[in-house]
Figure 1 (cartoon, rainbow, N blue to C red):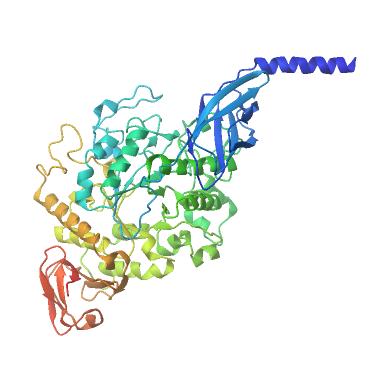
Figure 2 (figure 1 turned 180 degrees about the vertical axis):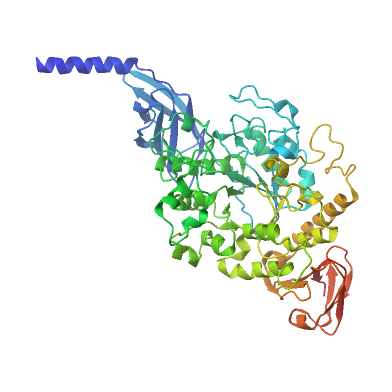
Length: 624
């Protein structure tokens, strides 16, 4: 009798399972490639009640290694395949079984295009140009409104804090401009889908990690843009965000696991205090709130300690390298994520692509705090952090420009260009100062030109400094035409439209139409120095020797075995006569120097004096 009851229950359970809803609407990644460094491939499968399905594969060289069923929504399943190095390209047949019901899907296994450029990385030989696609150029007005999105927020250029309609086609139309400017790498703010209320024009609230936002273009167009830039010798840096996603991402709407997000059921906002991560006296509460708190309610904080989530993100980065040929990644809000998990991500990328470069946004006030996050630092070990991040960002330079304004203020003994000297003097804290991203502004800070342009001489001085000191220089779009802006009234004011990139613009940077004389001169100066920088081994790889600013004049040398450059900056708003005797150790008697901007030649003998006009800057390369 007891056996009959158990058998009856078993039969009833089988019937119920067979009748249960069971579907598949998506598998990530969409495809993969043969011959990858790792044999393991995670498939994230989404569909109604898919979690209970069994999975099998019948394909030479491919087997199911494991199946992971998490404790969140039943609509997620994680299947790990083992792909042998001998597996041939083709369609992998996936069989999903649920009781008596079966679903089949084909998963593409592609051959890698080994001839395609990509994963080149960037270095101190490069000049990065930061572009916010929505504000650069509208090449396809037809995609300004995409009704298929859940939140089809269209373009409205009258509102500085919403979408304006710039897109990838607009950038593709002006790659000749980028080339003429002299930049060698372009960093786009995030281009992935942000299907969010309000439109999320900035791109930092991802809702689909495998899809270019349709208001910017398509995956195919993004790959075309990367290829077009490569044909001009320009690399592409993709902006990624692992710390958080958008609140409308399917993960947030239907979490795969109870630990997929930090503070998943009771969110708190981060304290934004990265100092807690290295502070030897910080409380555990404060540290946890820094890393696990949410940036804002609309950006739920991802838990990188969750293994299936991190596998997904690692594979997504590799997928974009293979699919589009990107060369590097700029990782947003780097220290807010779990640094051990991020080390794992870095190792996976570097194993697959040894030349690949990763720069992390570590928004910290000085070199002491910033250097903790660069690979090989001693201070990191002291702070209990063993980061493997190759390149960090010099936010200290931005803050000094904001607070001290060395290129604007009349120089005295302790301000002006002395602040820059003291800033560079702390480079000993970095394991590799040449792998520090130097910049004066970006999309999250007030513009270097706040409202009224500085004197042309002061602006040129800032550009000369940025493009000749050790490290990797980064220019924010519009800087070359004196674009201004503060954060007052919203971040849209520091993310203005590029003139000439949008229908109806009365002036155009791309054609030079109706640009002011000051803007045209600035553009010519920056492009001249940028193109020259490509040729200077001393600036790209050489040593640095600088002299304490004297009477407001800052002089430094960059030198390699084949090249020598001397930079002279007069930080005063008046004429200065400089006795050259104190600089004898970098001056070669009888040498001829060429001004890289004017092409004029001159001698610099220790016995002579040099006369400088107010705020004059000189970049001199030894001619013989």
